[in-house]
Image (tube, rainbow, N blue to C red; front, top):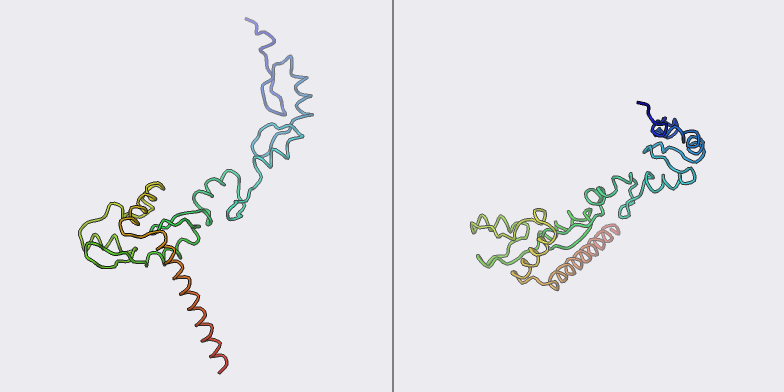
Length: 200
């Protein structure tokens, strides 16, 4: 049985597609003149759009948060997992801040105390879970770290913790303000002390 000429194909050496034989000469002339193969992805792109294709598809991009340059394909993963400026929440106060500042913030925030109604003592936030387990033999279900829960659960846990222990937003801001004033005063006195020792 003979194959109709419409079904016979030839491979274009430029775009490497199977082209029906009757259209092959016309396609070859058009393809070589108007299309270019992208060296990075292999797509055939109109010659007038090659630069636009590169910029929109392959050009390195800068992270909008930390300005690090990377491949476009890795940008979403970078922003979600490894960008030092991505926003995370403190496990003690649920305050959103860049991950690069998290350790320093939690060092201060974890040293704040909350009143334990069961034993009438003030307990550091960072020691609260251990305190509840070791002293009271129980672990509060909302005492887990914020890393173990999803964002909505963390917000709910933080709200419950603040309501249960009477910690209001005003108290948190007051604590931060007092800490800031203490740091300023400490640096002021340290500066005066170093100035007076240099004079002698």
